[in-house]
Image (tube, rainbow, N blue to C red):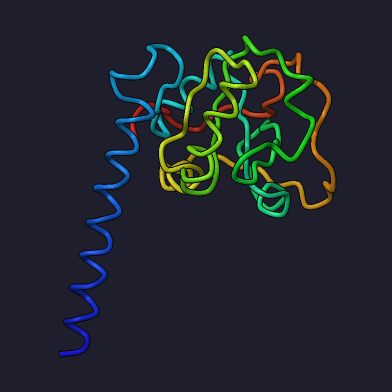
Length: 173
């Protein structure tokens, strides 16, 4: 009986989370928002956009998580709830489209207003973050020796910094 009760509670909790996430997504990415500001994309679509070379991945997770694993060529700009913890955004071109992501999508959603305030004009959000990227079997890289935020080479496009090509068709999830 206890196991059944736990399963029902977990199911209800997941259901409530998906309803809340759906409402949050409508506020952030729905038709009532300024069109063209933020586009919510799934992993396959993000991989395709990154291959086109005009999108810069922006990792907003803490440094330890970035060092462990991140999207290839990602710029690290840790976000702590209200503001970015690094001066990396000051060096970036505000008209360069960015793909913002975190582990599961929560922190990156929180960072969207700060990116807008910072003047970024074209933002893509990786739906469900690095978790969805890995589930789609897209490549990642790690940098265990890195101990600081990357603050140079912003003028290089993603395709120039990417040391390989994708082994499969990136369309889809």
